[in-house]
Amino acid sequence: MPLNVASSKKKEANKMKQLIIGSHVGVSGRDMLLGAVKDTLSYQANAFMFYTGAPQNTLRRPIDAFLVDEAHALMAAYQINKEHVIVHAPYIINLANTTNQKVMELAKEFLSQEVQRVSQLGFRYLVIHPGSHVGEGIHVGTNQILSIVNELFQKDKSDVVLLFETMSGKGSEIGFNLEQVIDLIHGVKEKHRVGLCLDTCHLHDAGYDITDFDNILDLIEAQIGLEKIKAIHVNDSKNERGSKKDRHENLGFGKIGFSALLQVIYNPRIAHVPKILETPWIDDYPPYKEEIAMIRQQIFDPSLKEKIKQVLKKKVNG
Ligand code: FE
Ligand code: FE
Ligand code: ZN
Image (cartoon, rainbow, N blue to C red):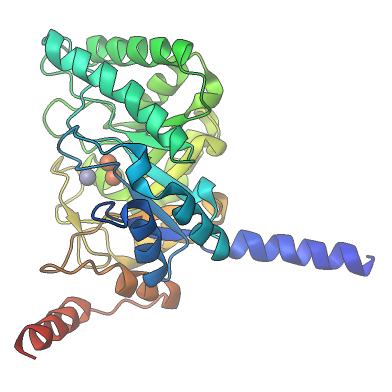
């Protein structure tokens, strides 16, 4: 094999091996998106996810306030690929609500603005919870979601891709099994504008066995192809498999366990997909730097929470 081919193959292999990892980061204050990139770098991460404002409301600051150019310059300097940045839609918008005209209109209007915002911020991927059918049934809810999304994509000509997230099945949530999410993806007419976001806590709480992640990937591969997976939320769960609770836990401290989560993170079939932590803060401290270090070392530290609490205590007292 000629040397240059060998070295480019090696480069390719290294690229495949590089872990794409990050966490949820806040966008607020004076630094806005620039602050999100700074936080990401401080966690030794190379991917991140953010809400364009508070996740529980629809108040949003104008794009001018986000420091978009500064954020992208910093990303470029540290080789953060913008394809590895995910925006999460606020969880109060419910595309599946067919019982309240006002809620429906708000969801529709906000989603269309949010897609525009994602595009203006220079990103491509918007994660959304499919929605809750509030008693009308999965079929009715699903139809409504699809009619909103298909109508939106007729008007919106950006390249933003909507990622439906797998859910735990609490309340009347749609998307607690892969078939439902796959149905949604099949129902979107603009095929290149829809994808999938897996959440390990949600899958586990919905009843899937995370220790057999290849089984989950096989199902997705057969139905829509693995390339539809654009983001993976890596969270442990506070509850037993099938509990339908949706309470996230720090990696290794929950019922999924560290080794099963590592196998998701290092699964070669999804090496190119950003892995995003949405694990709980410890007191008032986001533990992402420590959790990411633990992932890179591939060794669980059962005293991690205690250590962080000790450091925080010292800070308060000192
Ligand atoms: Fe989510
Ligand atoms: Fe999630
Ligand atoms: Zn969740």
